[in-house]
Length: 139
Image 1 (spheres, rainbow, N blue to C red):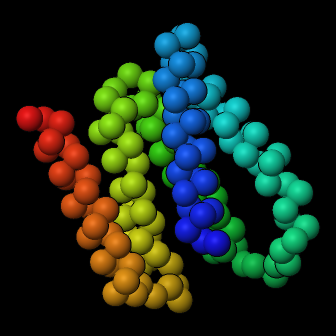
Image 2 (image 1 turned 135 degrees about the vertical axis):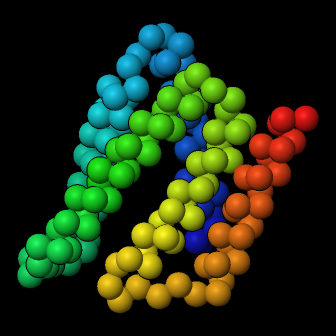
């Protein structure tokens, strides 16, 4: 189940970034692409919000974390759109997975978050794969 969802997500991301390259070639602005991508994603996720319990008692710090995640996500999406639109797609794709490393780093800052040895091993694999990809492309 979870592996199938991961593969499906990766396939959809590949299709999305193929479209990003086509949009960039057509002269679209990266910020416009990020805005409309975020809008469609939010509207697509809206029906599923009824399935989760909405916690209205969250404090200001929790809301600040959500806003920070949104801002960093938009910045990251802009960077990916720029990289996929004008750079080497293979290098950009491998660097995209470094977001997992950054997420792990941010989780150390969040109160109550623990990082497992399995997560650290996964980060090691991601970093190794990214380094090997860049090294191979440079040869």
